[in-house]
Amino acid sequence: MNGGVPLRVCPLVQVTGPDPRLIKANASPFHKAADGTTSLSASGFLWPEICSHEGKRHRVVMTSPSIIWPFLKQNYKSRFKGVDGRSLLSGAKVSMIIDQGNGTNSHTELPGDFAGFVQMPAFRKMVNSVIERGRGDLKLGWKLGNPPQQIWTEQQTDIMSHLAVVMVDATILDREGPEVGLGSRQREIRHVHAIGSPFGCISPHHFSQCLVNGTVSRLIDELVNGGRDVEDLRELMVFNGHVLPGMEGGLVLHRDSPDVVGVLSLPLHTSRREYPLVIPIHHIIEGLLGWSFGKLEFPPGLFTKKPPVSEESWGRGNEQSGGVMDPNGGLDLPSARGVVKVFVPGGGWGSGVIAGSAGFIVTCSHVLGKTEAVSDRKIHVKIEGSGWHRAEVIYRFEGCLDLAILKLAHLPSARQTPVLLTETASDVLPGQICFAVGFGQEHGRTGGTGAAINQGNIAKVVYHPDDKKKKKMPVMLINAVSVHPGSSGGALFLADGTLVGLITGNTMHSTGQSLVHFSFGIPAESLRPIFEWANSFCPLENRKKLKELDAVDPQASLIWSLSMPSPPRVPTDDSPGGRAFKAYLAEIEKEKAKKSLLKSRL
Image (cartoon, rainbow, N blue to C red):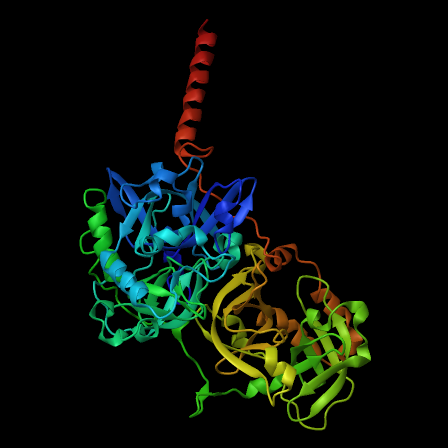
């Protein structure tokens, strides 16, 4: 478990196949294409136990059909029954990327076999009812992309109401997954985790198995006129949280127990917003049992057992520590007063944090613009309670860290509120609630009285891949929290005021659309030496320390450039390194030995 949340049970599922004209690539909200082939990815759910199929042991993974359907042969695209791996285009391959479970983001790519589609008739009925009675023009798929999933227009409800089944040889994935509850019916649901891989195939090392907090509601009246009175929509569930393309097929779990709520479906959307739907787990069980009759043999009691819930097995990632909420719903976060506005005339503005009492400000280097365009005496910093102050650039990092150190020209007369790093700052885990504090968008431009505070959660911690030297050293934070332009250099706090990271910005789609709910941050462990330098004796006389911290780290540079190499692929039976290939080599060696023995006898 990672912080009590079973991330390993949710692999990234990827399909790679021929696409010379990029038709499949352009119809998807994201893709990876090279040399006439395209890769699409979604999230998956690894069933907890091993199943039997034709006398062999297999692990079953269910995922969204949205990545399988584009690679079906044309005569199979109009039907969802009777299809399997033989229905795929020649050269199309299915694989899964699994977390190795050692806490350092190490992954392995496993080959998989597409076995067919499972239909959920009850869910299909609900989706049809929503589309028929919906307010406005409800469409299937993500709004992201241009045009969004145009290729699936005629198969909307078919795609929505199916899940794809992929089987993996249990001999290469023989460990049992974390226990999760698969009871046929769930109790009252509200706070949940969603585990998925947004934009996964682009960089699995970064985006596989991210965790997003949210709530599940049955807000049928938002989608359908008179929805409260519609009996057949009673179980339609909407996930309220920062869900992104690639998370479809991901698991939705209770936040306070290992009980499965369901699986994320492709969303419905209008011109104004998206509605990520959740397929209830009992619909999936009914569909899978019907589909697998005579095909798969499941262990008895698999779908009714409830795993024990203990503090050790569940809960570390669910803690909501600290923060005091006021009656109006705001958060009493004194540390937010240590976040300042940074303004460069003729350039732009951003945010920064006060590091100590000597007037040092830590911000992002890109906030200052190009080096030649920055005049040290023309940088202005606004501190809450003491107005604007001039500042100079002390150091700009040139390596992978997007950081710059400023120094106030004169210390303000009013007492500052420095941002503090605690010893627990390195203990951040996916699922922990966090607050992004900065002067983003209109708030920063119009000069509000304080920084804007947005609540979200840590989605993933990306660690340094060098296990020997920097094991468990966090290099990047990926956050499911709203971050707008101008927030760069702002702070990422836990609810108790602990600084866990510095905001570097959000992501941007190739269409130019800013994805404000998916942001990156520099972990506190990378900031700690800088804060120690700022609070040391005569730090300006020891600027070489900053140069040492700015030393080139090739592995960290790969992480920040989203250029990590692909995970190692487990060989199949017929590939070099596979069992059949090894047996073939063994036969060759036997033949050589026989010839050698015959020659010696002659």
